[in-house]
Length: 327
Image (cartoon, rainbow, N blue to C red):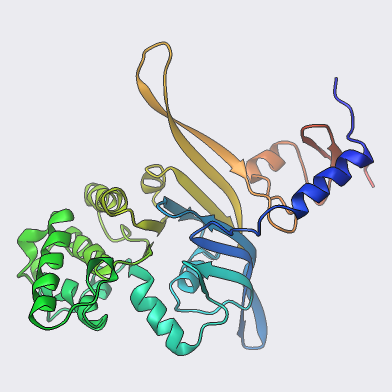
């Protein structure tokens, strides 16, 4: 039997909440009630409506959502290609709302790497694979792996070693002297990942990186992302509509109507009966900073929930029921 919490219990919880550290204080990526409004022909469209998201350092995660859900808008903001309208967004300690144009350029060069869906957009067609990978290092003014700055002959030698290291890591070293048109789509995308990693970014963002590839090649590309995550420790966020790709990561965040709606967390556990390891997935609804909860549509439809629901606070949970008042 459960009892409703007393006012003293609630007051204690409020005080405990007030004493907690700031939202996302230890996250690499923090989006706090993020808003992005576009205006077209005098009509305002809210692409992001108070979105909350935390990404920890070293994560490999996927963002999914229907067309128009806001996931591409979010990626453009995190990439420094767009500016939020309101809310807060921080990546590796950089405030994305207050950066100047010069700060934003430095941010795109030093903090984030980006892989586009279109293979042709990721590489310069007149440069070889090795030259494409070396270019970001040259733009960084002599910086190579670890943000170390070297110049002259030492810089060229360090750059060449780093280029070969990345191409070998992603299993495209045999393409080092080929131009993009001489490579397959899968090879181009793996070289593109090497280009995105060349500046030793804090986070790698990928927008539908397997969208133009067949399923077998898509598996190879995802394996390349996993290698970069595990071997280099790079934090990676992938926007994808490919459920096969989404199922390969430990955490998948769904965006709906400009807010995070659900998360699927996957963990490995050993089956006590067979002794074999298996992956167990569990879906969670997201409670945003304003206390809003997006219930899965299949749940609300099954119970005929519309417009409003009845709530009851219990000792260790909140009950949610359909509104049966008929009012």
